[in-house]
Length: 193
Picture (cartoon, rainbow, N blue to C red):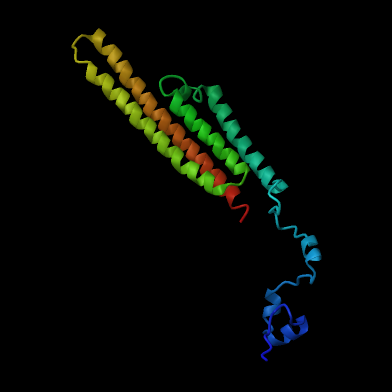
């Protein structure tokens, strides 16, 4: 009968005599019983075993990062820039991009990093869709005008400018949302390891 040598059945002293002198430095001592293994607390370990509550360090970083973002949005709102994308023909696309950004921030809080990455990638595509829609609006307005009368050309130029606003604001909002989600992913996503 062959005696199989297993790690669980061998005493620690016998293992130490077999293993090279360098290996004990690499292997940490673990308590023998599983109940005391669960009780060992590592202060450097910020991960939560039960995903019901976020660790204090992650939560504080999340709050500080989102406060910085909110301060930037308030600053743009005070200057009068933040409200422009949501007024006019492009409001639907811009509200859609803002909703995707809010969903991405919720995924950051829930630590769903793959979802954050997916949303950050696709919000730029929705911004590019706004570019295409805006250019279609602009060129369709330019096609209808063919008069030499300056009064007839003014509404056409206004429609072209409105189409360009749709294109530029949707693209700008999509890129800004992408960057914010990528910043969150970089600064908070690597926090979990």
